[in-house]
Amino acid sequence: METRHAGRAIFALAVGGFAIGTTEFVTMGLLPQVAAGTAVDIPTAGHYVSAYAAGVVVGAPVIAVLAAKAPRKAVLVWLMVAFALANAASGFVDTYWPLMTARFVSGMPHGAFFGLGSLVAASLVPAHRRTWAVAMILIGLAVANVVGVPLTTLLGQRIGWQVPFWIVGGIGAVCVAAVLAWVPHEAVTGEESFRDELRALTRLQVWLALAIGTVGFGGMFSTYAYITPTMTELAGIPLSWIPVVLAIYGLGMVTGMVTAGRVAHLGIMRGIIASLAAIAVMLAVFGYAAHSPVLAVIFVYILGVLPSILVPLLQTRLMDVAHEGQGLAAALNHSTLNTANALGAWLGSLVLAAGWGYEWPSRVGAMLAVLGLGVAVLSAAIGRRSLAVAAATARAAP
Image 1 (cartoon, rainbow, N blue to C red):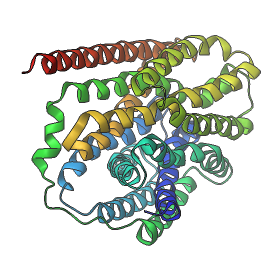
Image 2: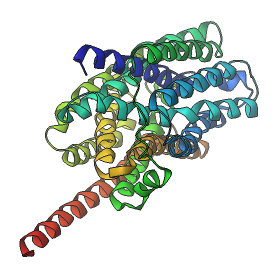
Image 3: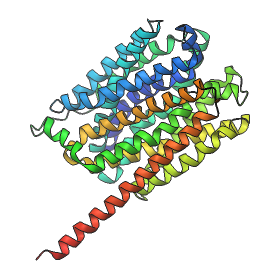
Image 4: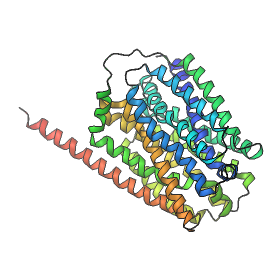
């Protein structure tokens, strides 16, 4: 495909990433307002974050398997239609369980959209640019945190917390139009099957990659889910400046996504291990740094950079080890990341409910990152051993 046409298709998918990133993170930025608007406390409002994440966890594998034989473009369109409608509906409820339900349904298309979108984007570019193509879709998440989340947070503070969800619904509609116009149709070959997709789950390295995402990313979400009260309570940053803090986090995400392609050239597993080690160190120090306004902002930026390098690397790793089950594996990457989201937000709520203070969610996160690092090291060791056995077998063959 011509570079210009590939760029348009990737941009169309990135618009969906922008919408998804805005709705996923704006709830965290407006947590006090959403809590007040639905008559619950802040730790309970953290459940809205978990509900969205749970929707991703459930929706990603189910949709990926059921849509295995369907044209990818059509599936992408219908996923974004459902996403737009569910987010618009989130703005019309104001009590706990209806909003929990709306956030769960809003999350269901998330993983499948990114999973299928990553496969489509990777198919449009040369093999050595796959991580770059995946990162360019995910950069929609990053730009959302520079523009979408701060802007909708500001509007949510000034007008009402429901407004961001209506805006996201509108962006979703724009994505539908862009996908219809620019993403090329891929004919169904007839070789796709539910069984092939499910076969990915029989591979140990697929499960290890998913485990890396689940525990390794839980640390970032345990910190970011409570970023607003952490900045106001510990750093003493005024609430009116929170949109700026969120934008700085988004700039960190953009930096990380742009950097991911270069890191991939050094080796996918090396990049994953180095990223997790850096995340663990950063989170271990975050609670101390957050008492200084300047250091708090710097660490928020770093909190955006490091995990954003890791996401495209994990996506590429799953595509490499899943073989014929790439659709399911690619979707499951976002399912596991949102399992991490739910896990991190839940563990953060536990330490806050116990009265340990806003320094502690990041310390819990550091422990999760260390666990993820251990899984990554194990995966790399098993991979090296498998290659050595294969090489020995080849030499021994007549």
